[in-house]
Length: 284
Length: 157
Image (cartoon, rainbow over all chains, first blue to last red; front, side, top):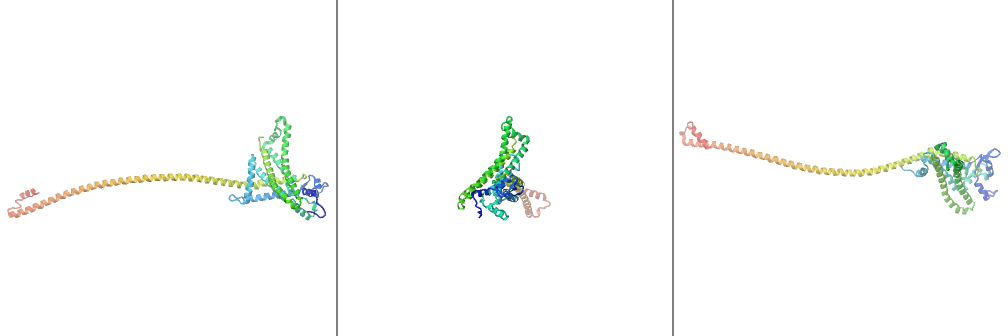
């Protein structure tokens, strides 16, 4: 990626890798791609990260189409290898849901499956060598007439807090919805106001439970984001080393990262199940 | 690392994927798995039942064999008894019949003896009369001495 007329420093390389492909409204009103990190920052809230959305969309479609295809031709008798794989994943998720979720809701298990597989796929993007996708994106960008150094591409959606926050906000909405649906408006209010210290301490209870409630989606999102961001950061730092020594660090880190990829997806899924269970519990 | 509309895009995608998974992916897979589980369970139960039934059938078969064995011995014993009875009866009847036949034969014999004796007597008396008449020649008129001849023949018998 070294261009002839611009020298890439370590810091610009890192910065370049940590910038999303942003499309949004410039301060002066018109819409377009951000050419620098500063421009992206100036766009504020009215912008979208095309790389995050695109990659996560493609991975979601990959997951759904693969499972859908196998699910359509499920057989009772002698399952094929892929069917076995799908079944083991599904039964693993199902066991987890049965173990932690005590309510009656046919949505929780598919939700857990979607969460787990989607996050696993998005995290797995971290294992692709850090320069591959940005390089391809730059080639395509240049082909479309963009400046080589203005094409950003961040391939791991879960290293974008927007992605993890988007998911955790979805979970948050479900928590609120099912809390009210299962406990009633009054029941939910009582839970927020009269616990854990009884009626006399109402403001304090409200504050405590409120923080507790808000902390759920934020911790959920930031845990996943933080882990993946740190992992990606280390891959980028390793990529700064001379190419002949990179493997000695990137290989162990990648192998270790496989564990993190699965572990973070599992933690996210387990917490989703636990939060759903808490939302469905009638007695506190 | 700016928070922006991407968040909502991701949220909408997440909702859509979850909905699709809930609608079209989870049910067929879980139904197929449960169906297989049921089948395997049923198969195992059937096998267990089959084994149990086999054991039961074996016991039953043994019982039947034993029963039929005792029945057979009983039948044989009965048959033997009946046969010996029949032989006894036959013997008795035969003896009785033999006695009857013997008696009849004896009676016949006696009758025949009497008959023959009478005949012999008649023949002897005729012969005597013939001889006497030959000896006496015309001195004895049969018609005249009828009474005497009759007494004679009577005494010969």
